[in-house]
Length: 213
Image (cartoon, rainbow, N blue to C red; front, side):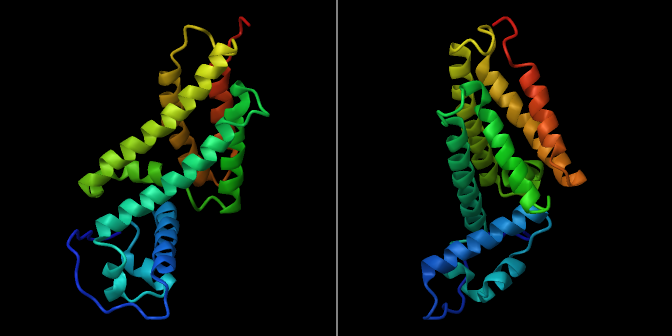
């Protein structure tokens, strides 16, 4: 998104027939699509508005600033991602040690469905952090920490069952998983194949399972 300006400006009022909340949600979805496909540096607000059919001058009737718009796009993505992650990690039909595989399968399916044009928004923005407004940095860090915390809880439950070595640091393992996962997502997008995701998961699990059990 080029030339982020944090100061709101006046513009033409939106059409009376357009519902404000629906339009705001559509703008967030359009921004999400654009950022996950092209990243921050390659995105522009004009294209996002054009896709939704909103005049440029009406943008500030929905968001206080472009920075605020980006924050809402990030929050929307994080909320959906965490909902999907929680569904996988809390699935009681699968043992704790195998629940991460549910997430991996969902990610493989998602990237395949979008023909590997979309990656992870949080990972993409993390790589471009020096181009982002300062407020985004802490927001991205907090999201990564929330993912790590969720995975650590699942790994600790598996550790209690004896599936992970009792001396393993589950919090550290969870952090390392997400560090490596973002690289696997980037490689999957590059080679247009889900294999890097599977390879990384297999590698992570090989060092995780308690072989003494």
